[in-house]
Amino acid sequence: MSRKPSVAVIGAGIGGVTVALNLLRAGFDVHVYEQARALREVGAGIQISPKPRASSIISGSSMNW
Ligand SMILES: Cc1cc2nc3c(=O)[nH]c(=O)nc-3n(C[C@H](O)[C@H](O)[C@H](O)COP(=O)(O)OP(=O)(O)OC[C@H]3O[C@@H](n4cnc5c(N)ncnc54)[C@H](O)[C@@H]3O)c2cc1C
Image (cartoon, rainbow, N blue to C red; front, side, top):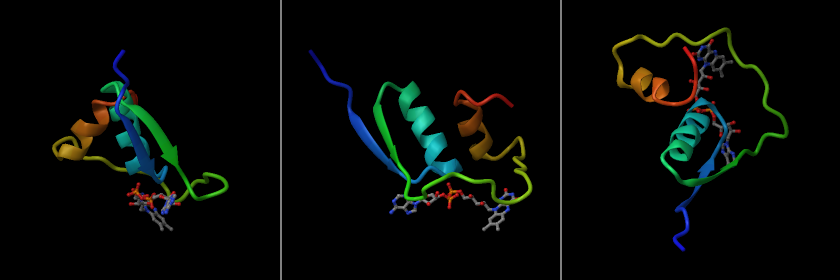
């Protein structure tokens, strides 16, 4: 029986959560570690232009845009 490769993601910011979602979809066993006691809202909003690679990475995840 083969085991899923296990990956630790340090930090549950937008970067860490996006990486974790995509690794989960790729079949990895993902564990996210966050130092903050609670996640809270920071800033006003997020603007993602259609062309940069970041938007294609995010749209490849399970996030709906
Ligand atoms: C006051 C403020 C307002 C902002 N407003 C906006 C805005 O309106 N729009 C916008 O697009 N961007 C805004 N930004 C920028 C935006 O917050 C960052 O660009 C974005 O959060 C970066 O994401 P990230 O996942 O790379 O890092 P972060 O969001 O910094 O996430 C990193 C996470 O890792 C955790 N971490 C760090 N070290 C460890 C460790 N050793 N163990 C466990 N966990 C760890 C941290 O607690 C954090 O939760 C703002 C930033 C600030 C400070």
